[in-house]
Length: 396
Image (tube, rainbow, N blue to C red; front, side, top):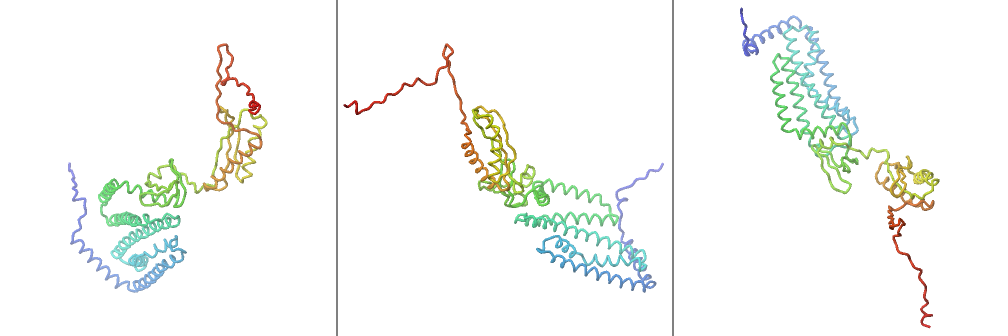
């Protein structure tokens, strides 16, 4: 029985200088023979490749023109225009050569070399295009939605570095894999390094990604009035790590982007209306016919003040009153308009109740005391009649 053992050194391909020299010699000999036997096809292929390259260069020059067509130079045409402008000369040349290789009848050695160089150029060019489109999308979103602030603009440098590192690391792995190199160890090393960096700066990255989530998901933007937890205010700036909110009392509140997104946020600026609810009590002595008319009375008051009546009705038997609920909407989303309408409605109801003779009672409580024989004892003494005395008659 024969046992085969394989060492790590046997698995790893070794590039010997003699092999490299032999491959170079084979490529040289094949190229010479190709030039001698297919010179006419080669000349035609060079002409065609030159035409393709000139066309691609012309299309690359169209990129800046496309960017200028955008009104502000920051829209989607500008994003794709800058990406086209970043097309590399080496990629254009290798693409042109790759397209005419089969027509020119290139030998396997030449065709393999062109394919290899074309693969390298394509992979890295794709990384450049992806970087420009991703960064352009972030900048476009930030500017179009008024998210751009000094902190976010300065953060673009860090975002560009991270995006560039990730994309070109992927491109390098793809190229090495096409070369036949075992990239498993490299991928594992990059994964471990990424985990270490992520754990070391998890707070910063969490807030950074939260800022990007705010930009793309658009729960709010600068200038919006928002409420979260028990706090309300106006968004003043969305930064790399935190968002600054001006409170209703004038204070500036600073909260990290991650913590802010973890909360339930109410965007008051995007309201279509604001709803107000009143609970109004009337006296128990109010006649039943009058009680039936109260919801209609409320509706007349609301519509007379150009509000939107929602509903009204009897709610509860309270200790000293019969309580009615009233709900109405302000036709505008701003808080001040709803505040003013609430003030007007409250005063109008008081006046209307006064005209109708409807009493809004104070909270009252009456205590009755009983004598030993069971009769009620009045809480005050009997009052004797006061006799009027004329001082002038007394003097007389």
